Length: 62
Image (tube, rainbow, N blue to C red; front, side, top):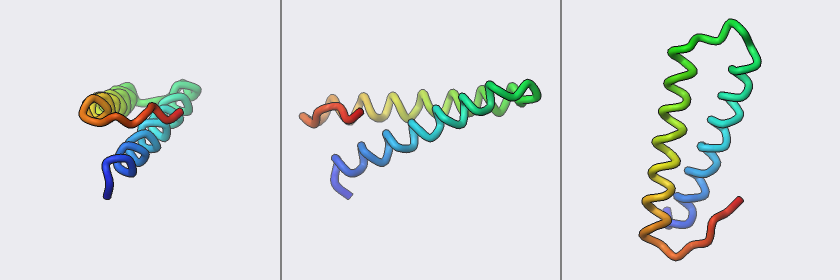
């Protein structure tokens, strides 16, 4: 997998986690531990994306 493809896949996973977090926040019975784990995973993906972007010259895809 090329670096560009890897970045796109990471961004897609990041966006999917964002949607899952938003969906969980709408439900009052959301498990706070699950929500915290989703946020940690999202942050980890963001950190990885930023790190890889720093190592490449690819523009941000939004």
